[in-house]
Image 1 (tube, rainbow, N blue to C red):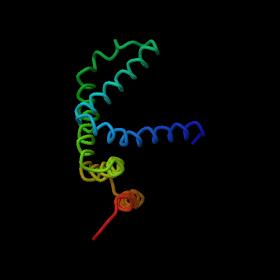
Image 2: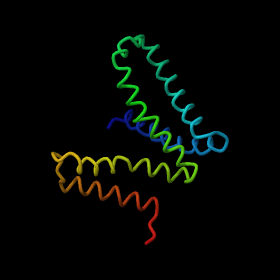
Image 3: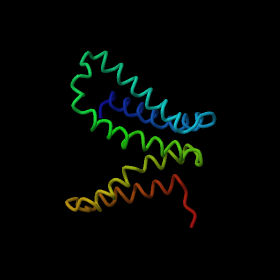
Image 4: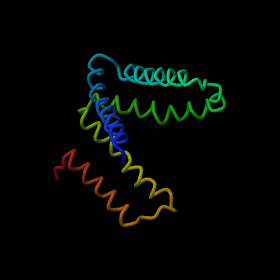
Amino acid sequence: MSRRHLIMLLALAAIWGVSFLFIEIALRELAPTTVILFRIASGALALGIYVALRGNGFGGLRAYVVPLALMGAFNTAFPFFLITWGQQYIDSGLAAILNASAPIFTAVFALGVDHTQRVSGLRLVGILLGFVGIVALVGFEP
């Protein structure tokens, strides 16, 4: 991994990680749906400016409006709502840890649904190590 890629990865991790703190702060004064509206609107504005500055235009996206809207609803808006609603009741650190565990649950789900996926020793070790990490961060009391 190049130095530039490492810096980009660390910046992305910082941006994603701090979002949970800002959600917690915003929830002190705003309803969860308002927080989500601001998050999605600011992201759409930033992407719109980026596309406009590149000069590509939006014409090529017209054929994909419905699939993109569905993907945006289920892959972005709905999870944002669940995270923001949940953060009314749990700490932002716990919300970040639980959100970061999604790839582990996705791997387990894929093994159960897609029977072409085989459980190799390395995959199993990775999944188990991920679960151990979650338990270590969240805490475990028998």
